[in-house]
Length: 392
Image (cartoon, rainbow, N blue to C red):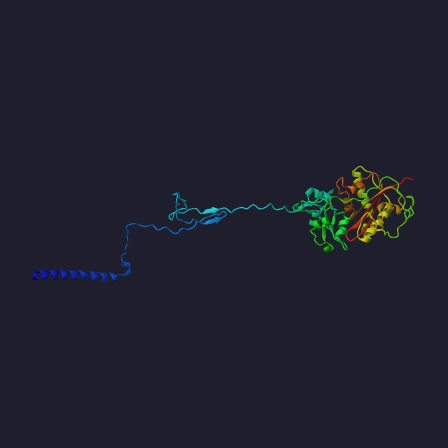
């Protein structure tokens, strides 16, 4: 290589070295600049790729809401090309509002209805009106065995739900000392198996005193029927005295005292008021019939139960004759009640043709009545003996 060529190469090398040196100096100077003077670098890619946000489920709100906060979501596209527009990341969408599903439940049973007892109301009448048995009203109001209702009482009438297979005549009975299931059934003319089934009794020996049982009666129980108009054969075991003679005072009969002393005549007045309402003549009061009734009431109280049959096996006709009442016909009604009004209500609370007590009180055949009262564990045994005196 000539000298000239070497000089050119050297000059070029020198020039290149100077340029490289200036570049290095520039880089060193740039690295020492304060941070705020560092120029920002902007990258401009050839194709701008938009990155979709991750899918966010649309908010679900149960029930109505006063305000809603939109939640942006992506717009998925189905394979078929149709889209479900849930909004984009650049706009807001209304959140889906889901109304709560309403499940219809069974119609609840109506609550108990309050009924204010009015004059003329009876327990059986209320049972028929509200389509429940008498027992349902008794149990709902803690009446025990009481079948008489008084004007002004406010009774809770339970719903008929659960009583569909009952009859209005069903009544409540409270177990007493020495009671047996068979005895209760026999006394009320019921089948013992039916009585046990109705009350869910699996062991008849487990009855408890005071336990409330349902008596599935099919009608109000009848009193001893009125005797036909025929002369009665005298009872030779006791002398029969004419009605014109005073009746002997039975040794076992006790005179009434206290608050019940006026009950016989109070009940007589109630009975005659009902008879007047039906266009009937009033009953006359017979002290002889009253003695017969009082003796039987005390007999029932002494043995703790009552029926038309006395503890000696006698029936009403025989007891009335023994008391000295010569009759062409007799009848008897009895009830366990707490008042004269309760006794009347029970007897009149019957529906024809199953109304023997009612028909006795409204009878035109018997013309006289006598009434006996004796206290018992619950209320009183009230006996009404009726007669038509034998003509001389």
